[in-house]
Length: 404
Ligand code: HEM
Image 1: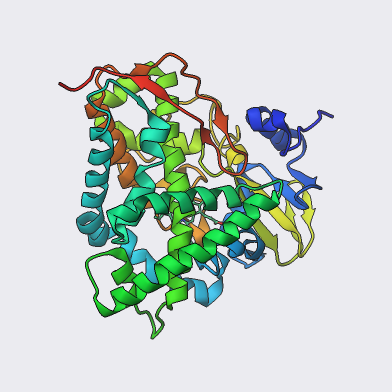
Image 2: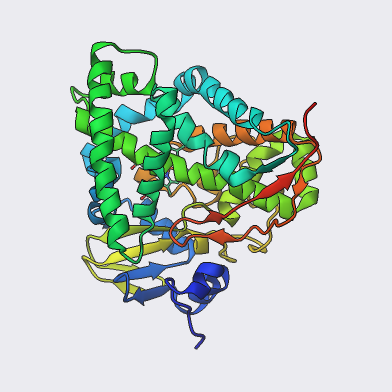
């Protein structure tokens, strides 16, 4: 049998895709000692774990994965508690609320970032744009002072370091715990103030939201805002960077998107399939569950490999080819990500920010293309990806014809 590279090895981190193939083909249910979890890699199996209509999987794993840095969030909830929390939160991320309040926020922040480099003819798209836009947008949606955005970015860096701390480095863990305290000291007074003086922002909307007589406490709202740093920040950051990495590697597809901006939606969907920002999501088995490779015992942790499932040859033709026009992708116009790939998960915890992410990408990528005629890789361009749980390009230095 072929040896499966360990998911914590440097070889895997450098390029996980060959290992994913070996897992799908020869070890679709694989015990992993270091993370003490069962790894599943086939599309069909990952889809079954996410959809789980029978309640055979819980998200109790988040009690140790994210609780220490965020507190109790929607991700740890299930059943009715989750349904009510979802109903409290979801309306802020779709429809008129999204269109009228938050699209202008995205436009404004994208423009400010691009204005800082459009006259220079060069940019590093990860540091100058991708890591900035989603966090600036969240801070601005929440109605936080512009002067506090840098602090918000520092907390963002600390939170994602905590969540990505696979080796359990104690310095990173302590820093995460400190961030939880600092974040609460900053947010709770602002939440209290918004309850007194509501505005037109997301915090005020969350303070006022009520479903079946249930409202969110100050602590609930603070934990949700902390979750947004990771759930809405790092993911969208890596999606924007990923689109540019993939398009710059396929200049004919970059030219097609430049020509027809409606193709940004397809470039987004294909990027989420081909290089998803989140590669691994865990669950806890509530009962014995049989999947294609065998049986997961009750109580065990399951690691779902989104990055592997999205390249499953039984689901996609020629899965290792990046092709925004592939016909096994449906989201050319309508938002149908659930049918396209597993990057937003599926089922109860399906990404509540998917439409916001799509808006950020469409506006962000569109405005960048407008501002960067003649876009091309700069000297030193080497789009290596880094990360194992989450993954994206390390840096993307580019050149273009400067604005006059
Ligand atoms: C849930 C991915 C953007 C907020 C999720 C989950 C995934 C995901 C995989 C499921 C987690 C699980 O089942 O354990 C992504 C990707 C994004 C993105 C790839 C960008 C391309 C956003 C944005 C926001 C957001 C912009 C909000 C600002 C959330 C929240 C949940 C979630 C609150 C939890 C939903 C629940 O538990 O019901 N996301 N996300 N995400 N996402 Fe996103």
